[in-house]
Structure formats: C-alpha cells, structure tokens
Image (cartoon, rainbow, N blue to C red; front, side, top):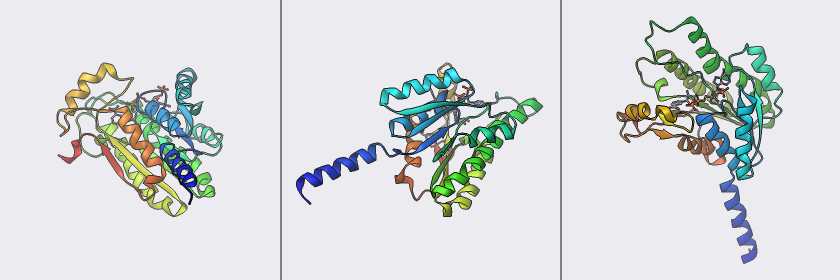
Length: 262
Ligand SMILES: NC(=O)c1ccc[n+]([C@@H]2O[C@H](COP(=O)([O-])OP(=O)(O)OC[C@H]3O[C@@H](n4cnc5c(N)ncnc54)[C@H](OP(=O)(O)O)[C@@H]3O)[C@@H](O)[C@H]2O)c1
C-alpha cells in the first residue's frame, strides 16, 4: 500500500470511529429534555439521522435546531406515549425505517409512600414507562429484522435494580424494562438486533438543575459520591448503539458511580 493510500485509509478509519452512527436513523423518545436530549444531540454528532421525540413540537424543534451546531441531521416527531397503544403503534409505523430505538421517555412519579400512590399514577407509569416501549419495539422490530440489523437501548434506572423508598412504583417500571431488555436480547440476537439497557443513578441534566442538591445528597451514598451527568449517559448510549458494542447483548449497564455495587 502506498503512503498516500495508507494516509487516506487511516483518515477514513478515524472518521468512521468519530461518526460511528453514520447512515443510521435513531428514534430517541423523550428527547425534548434531560438525558434524552443529550442522547439525541450526541447521536446527531455521531452521524445519526435523529428523530427527536416529545409531546410538544416546539420543544422538540428546539432540540432539532441545536443539532445543526454539529451539522447533525434531525427532525421532530410527537406523540403522547400515554395514549392508547393503537395511537402509539400508528405513530411508530409512520416513521419509516428506524435502525436504533432508545426508549428513554418516562413518567417520573413523585416520591411518595406506596399507600399514597393514585390509580392515575399507576396507569400513567405503566403506560408510558412499560407499555409504550413494548408497543414501539413491537412496531419497529419487523423493519429491523428485514434489514438484518437494529439496536434497542432501554433507559432503566438503578432503582430498578436496588430498592429505594419511597420510589416503589417508579422502580417497578424500571425493573420491568430491565426484564424486557434481557428477554428481547434473547429473542432478537439471531436477527442481528442488539438490546441493552442503561441504568443511571442520580443524573444532573440541563433540565433538572433545581434538583441538583437532592441528586448530590442521594449520590453521597455511592463510591463516587457525585451524581452523573446527562453527557456521560449519552456517551454510553453512543457506544452501545455503535459497532464497538457488537458483542454486547442483554446487558443492564449501571452508570451510577458504583451505587449498586455497595
Ligand atoms: N435524571 C435522573 O436522575 C435519572 C436517573 C435514573 C434514570 N433516569 C431515566 O432517564 C430517563 C430520562 O430522565 P430525565 O431526567 O432526562 O427526564 P426529563 O428531563 O423529565 O425528560 C423526560 C422526557 O420524557 C418525555 N415524556 C414524559 N412523559 C411523556 C409522555 N406521556 N409522552 C411522551 N413523552 C413523554 C418528556 O417529554 P415532554 O417534553 O413532552 O415533557 C421528556 O422529553 C427516564 O427514563 C428516567 O427514568 C433519570
């Protein structure tokens, strides 16, 4: 190989490594805020064509606007994931080919005793945090199977792994998402589809700044003694979505400063 060919090839390899999601279309649910927004921006910077999902078009469009800073490609898509399953399924089936699904959107239930949880909170939590990811994956996986590849990343929580009073309902929805991750990984690996979950601990985002003190207090119990950041979660999501994670299936990866280890 000539020196010129070698230089050209190593430049292409460097570009491929810095843009590992080039040519892929990614749906990130709940990308109008927090961790989902950070994942959408990181995916766009990594070369993906990003479907920025939320309930509000203006909020989703504002995130799309920010992807242009990295010359990323994105468009806003909206649906209430608490709507009936047929509405959520129609939404997903109307998106066209989706190579990467990030189930990030969640109803965050206020921390309260299990004796105080309302029927409405139970149904919203199960609907948005568990039923919607099942419906979205069910609608998008047939296309992934046809193309012979796909990635699903479920955003769980360390409260889905360890108990935390008084967050039983929220933790139950995240534990369910972890269980789905393992079963889907087993069901879909032979079709070229990888399914994994990220289980963050307390995480500071652009949108929960007012709660920083509470997150810092919770993080004091972890070995790293600090909350995580949305960008740290987003970088892990880029890795899991890309080719370097080719042999990772069914993993529930904590990003919590070691909280569940102790
Ligand atoms: N931040 C943390 O400390 C932490 C820790 C562990 C796990 N997590 C997990 O990380 C994920 C993101 O959390 P976050 O802190 O970034 O939350 P966030 O800032 O509150 O963002 C939640 C996102 O979900 C969307 N969403 C909520 N209900 C919806 C519905 N019914 N239909 C459609 N979209 C809906 C919101 O969209 P709208 O713009 O329409 O409101 C928003 O984009 C969640 O799965 C959460 O459980 C977070």
